[in-house]
Amino acid sequence: MSHSAANTPDRATASAISHAARVIDSLRPGLHADTALRQYFAYWNRLGPRQKRAISHATFVYFRWLGWLDRKSSPQKRIAAALELQTRFDQNPASIKAEAIAALAVPEWTRDEVTFPAESLRLLQTDPALWLRAQTGAAATLPAQLVDCEPADGTPVPAPTAFRYSGRQDLFLTPQFHNGLFEIQDLASQLVGHACAPKPGQTWWDACAGEGGKTLHLADLMQNKGMLWASDRSFRRIQSLKRRAGRAKVFNYRAAAWDGSAKLPTKTKFDGILLDAPCSGLGTWQRNPHARWTTTPDDVRELAAVQTQLLANIAGSLKPGGRLVYAVCTLTRSETTAIADAFTAAHSDFEPAPAFAASTSDAAQVTIWPHEHNSNGMFIAAWRKK
Ligand SMILES: C[S@@+](CC[C@H](N)C(=O)[O-])C[C@H]1O[C@@H](n2cnc3c(N)ncnc32)[C@H](O)[C@@H]1O
Image (cartoon, rainbow, N blue to C red; front, side, top):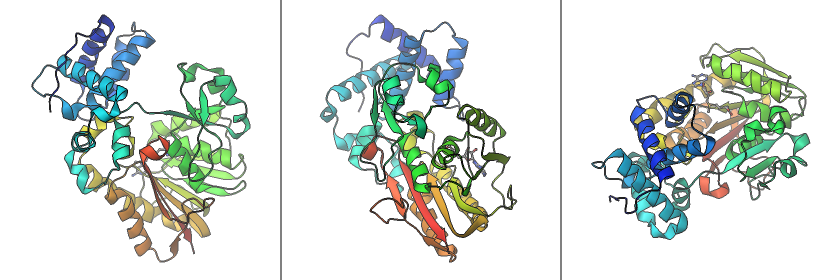
């Protein structure tokens, strides 16, 4: 189905469309839309916050509705058509049929890998929620300070430090952010920390720690008591982790490079290990619609092999009775249930354990669909070492 712009956009929208067309034109394999936007804004440094918001919006909306657009029309016309579709959908979600969304919002290859609930697909066509995680000590006062904060509810286990922010201020500029009282962190990522549920005084390893989003949460749950190892293969990410840890006043951690191989960064035996593995990221497709059209079945296959290898390499570092948590922000069967089932089959010294120990469900594998909590999609599996 194609769609043409029926109305002439106002000047501000027309300007956003023409900037967005240039951003989209600058995309190359390996360059993500959010990085391209950052680079574009660094170059066009006179653009104000409102213009930047409009350009980002037009760019993301374009990729959200790409499946509906007439590939033969000009980029500007396509972006205008996408913005119209978005307005129509936001005003009346029923105006676009579930069958059309199932057929056009995500690429066809995903049907072999994921059965998206219709509500999740609908959510993919809207703006993502902004979640923040307060430090435990700040959770009582932060919402009133920042305003426009709603606590998370209905999660599989309580997430008392998670708040949905719906205000307009740039949170990175607030004194509370600079003082480390909160982090921007998606609710599903916060649920991974609650699935780990580390205890004060324990020793944990965040094996693919990246920039430390989950490391900092684990430290907070441990009341900064005990020891956390944080490793990643990216030096740049570890440097960023160290900066964030300094801001959050987290000091009970050791950061180390680890390339995922059998040569581990430490001989320590841990009470718990989190493997927040590299993945195809389908669970982030609401926030990152460009990736819907750049991710391929080959990526899924290659990442599944990496995930299997990473799990096998870390398994020996758990103490008997220790807890292993596997998390991926994707929803493909190959990277979720297939990985977890294969690990259980190959490791008789591990038994599946409830993913959320504090919940009434004892499911060892949990898929968090985006529509359930207005978050990213996530898969979590847990084991106990016998
Ligand atoms: C899902 S991200 C981690 C996000 C992070 N835990 C957080 O909460 O911010 C996966 C991480 O795995 C790292 N990675 C990718 N391949 C790896 C490998 N073979 N060995 C170790 N780390 C790897 C990436 O650099 C990336 O930071």
